Length: 304
Ligand code: BEZ
Ligand code: FE
Image (tube, rainbow, N blue to C red; front, side):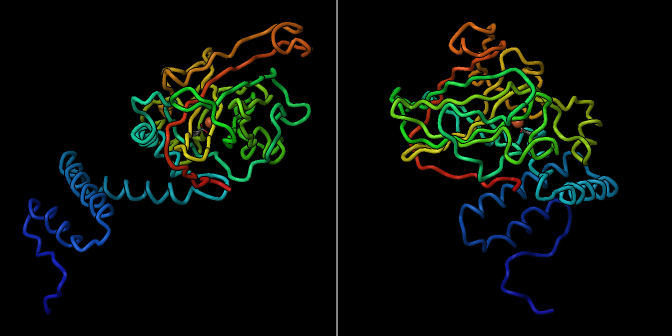
């Protein structure tokens, strides 16, 4: 066979494989893509050698990846779930959104972010009429790292219901229930009313659930709200705020909890506190989000 111009070589033994594969990829034009693929091959090959993967285990691993892909559809993203339970998503969020600037740390996007949530005026309720659960009033501010209010930031909010289900998982909730999009005022504030979310198990009916069971791990997340904040001149913040009295704060199945993201869910008796006109006991959450300077980016929703 004639030699091609492509660099590479003939494999002699285990020791020669990595360098020959890297040589074959050496024409990758985009330098960043080349850096990522080189490191993937180096670390991937080192991993295979470290565990001395057997043929049967390799087959099992490939079948697992295939099943993860096959478990995806427009309403469910098992690939994101896998990245989340392995801590990949949290590590990437922290690598990109946590530093000494004082900005609020990022947290994983998760598989339940949808684009196109309804736009609401401040103060609106994101829970549909007759939603069960204790009322939660959120008063939040968006500030820059010098403490100045960030006006006109767009804030996407999404959360699970008091029984721990997102609207897309639950036929009894209307479309886009417990999701909304708000805009900050001149004081950087955005406010809304909701119902207190519950902690919940991540979906366990697919291959990721089987992996968690094999690892003897519980599938629970502590109660939280998701926020994605977009503002001109600032890096986008994708984050979560966790209820301080929630179970599983120190064993979140997707490793999303950061001390700075634990918010005080203050309980008020009916007729007392800042919403004294509310006729039942309720909760308030006051929270400041701090954005770093930068250019906004827009995450691709994992589901439609
Ligand atoms: C979530 O918080 O929406 C979530 C994150 C990771 C896996 C499953 C759900
Ligand atoms: Fe969530």
